[in-house]
Length: 594
Ligand code: AGP
Image (cartoon, rainbow, N blue to C red; front, side):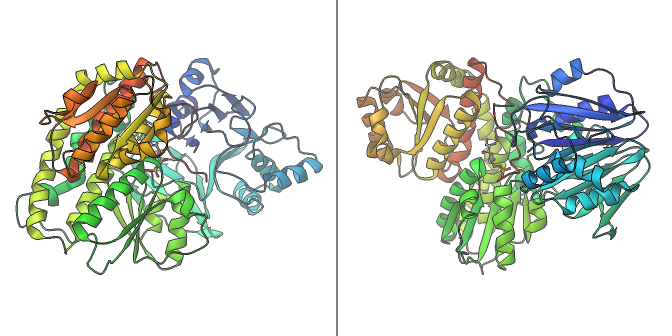
């Protein structure tokens, strides 16, 4: 969480820092601030969004500076707790992302030595430690300060009289953006896309020093070479392109995302286009680890892989797996994480790597930390996702899982051929859902009046009920729960009444008959029912209050069309309720703390 930017060059730093912060807000947005170095350090920070800071911050003169957008961990969002933090003499300014676990002891020690710390944050100890250790060399002082620190950090340091920025990282992401006569340091690529697409990914333990004309990286106290990469994302990818919200734009990008993620191998009908298997036939069991929406993708992956490959798959919440002592021997582990930076996922990945378990990551972010831990990476091609609610990256994860399963050598070739043909139709089917917005908007208007909602599904669409509920609660603040349809009668029935709508995902598969029975049971308790059903189903309209129609697709692909409909339902419901759709309260897109 938290977004960091640093700039050094010939231009005025302030507007560059603020623009970059606006591109980083998905990492946290409860307060923000900048520090610019001219003759002294000018700091402006407040518990406001970046847009407001752009309007109200006074001009700060200088062509070197740092900025931060915060997701609070230690201390409430307030001007005092916002970053940058300074030393006693306001000569050193620091932005930090991460958690310093021994900050209380450091704070006591610094206070007893005469330092005056004014915020409630863990981060504020860093500028004071640097002040303590500074003897004319900023890099050395940063290194000495961080030697005292336990926990995780990405930091950028600015000091009066030092024409450079010094950065360091441990278990939190940091990149250097390489420009012409100017350089950048940032938490993430979108922050710098308006200025450059040349990137160096810092590794844990690196100290990066950037000046106007150069980049030096010190690792383990000596210089190291880190490769420069050219990123393919562009600054247009992180703009709304005429849509009211990023979430809506990202939902509408999904036909393109499916095509790009499938790539040449799946889309080409040319038999000469071959691709080696992602999984080879030595794999006998699989462990999938993920959080939130990515976990729901993992649950669907289990259905697909077990059905097509006959391999047992266990799906675990990565945040729970972390705290188990027992190391689970598995032939292979798949981590699913769109950001590639989720701490709850990275920690078990590292443990599994140490235990020699083969790890594969499915991620959307090239160069992310997860790609550097895993033995193997499968990239989804969703492009940057800015809205905090995961939409296009979820669908891309499903496509990657289909592809992974279909590339397994043991899959019956006739079934494979048939499913690949269906996969190729999926972008057009998703487009049909997107063209059906009017019906979904009606349902959203209806739903927006309620405070509690259940989502029910069965089989491969049970995870879609979980995902539908997560999407709705996350952006509309309506209390929503996802349930396996058969489980409602084992307790939640007690909550059903005319004020508690139920959204039923009705798939045309072996769960169809029993799902209709479950809907009748719900109706008998007077709950309004909205069904998501395919456009061939002639029965469902008689049983429920409202229907959202989706095109009929093969049962393993039904989660894709159903989820797109539920994304739109959540989006329009949140819009009716006037919620902050792209930046819901208390959340952040990249969850880099445990
Ligand atoms: C979903 O809309 C959320 N933003 C959240 O649940 C997210 O999926 C989760 O934090 C995992 O993120 P990751 O895929 O980047 O690991």
